[in-house]
Amino acid sequence: MLLSNGNLVEQGRLDGGRHYAVWDDPFAKPSYLFALVAGRFDVHEDRIVRASGREALLQVYVEPGNLDKTRTRWRA
Image (cartoon, rainbow, N blue to C red):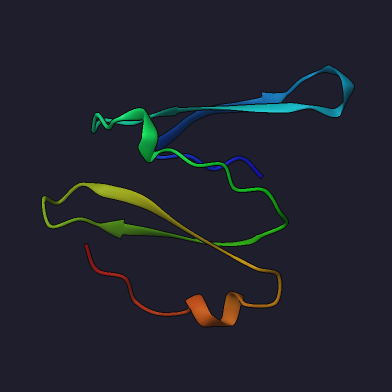
């Protein structure tokens, strides 16, 4: 699982069982605010409408077996 700040714009598979992802983060941040997360996760995905009226993809990653804790109505 590859996670990052911003919006996922591209992902794919590479040789040797590897994969990649490209994100676009519209909000500049100092490099020390980035982190690496490694593990197995389940993901709850939902489309939300932000206060501006724009639609956004919300993804909540949890440890396997905890998806039931993400079932709620999200508001931006």
